[in-house]
Length: 227
Image 1: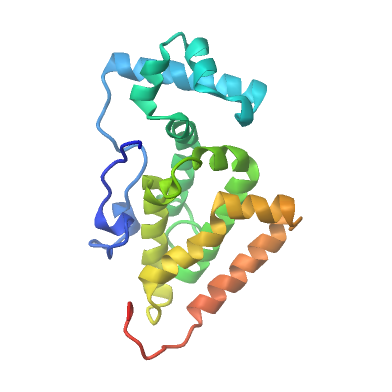
Image 2 (image 1 turned 120 degrees about the horizontal axis):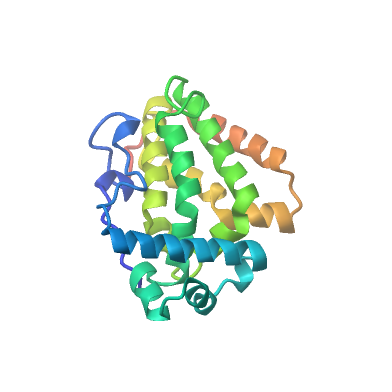
């Protein structure tokens, strides 16, 4: 199984320990690479991007990438773990732009809007991302059943949604509700609704708005969170 980066407790289910979106775990904050390793990485990812554009994600293999990048296949596995890890690396640049948007970008996605409004904008942003690159997202999440849930990307989303829920809906069990809200935004679910069920993107966004409204308006149950 691919080694995953250590996550702060806020990213894997514990409460946020510090206030403010600026403390979320963010892609690209890893230790700086050696210059030769960074060059190797760029060459591999450039080859993978080229093959992806030419042949599609279904035909993107580690053998083909190693050949195009002129490196041994063992180098790929040591560097990225497996095909899913390499696909996640391809997604990182696009993912960083989205994270920058909800952490420090303009409202309503970024700070400056009410938490409920930001939560709605966050869901719309993820749905748009699935619309643009759903097959790649699904391929990156294939393999171990819990791969997506343990990845730092999901941890960042979860920490962000948890923080917004604490502000917008403190009466609910926000630790549970964060995962419940992120479930319908998973690439596999979105692509199933779009392709198998024929649901329009705007319908999915309207459904997300209704889901957020229901959670935020949920009355106090009288039970302690987690009981």
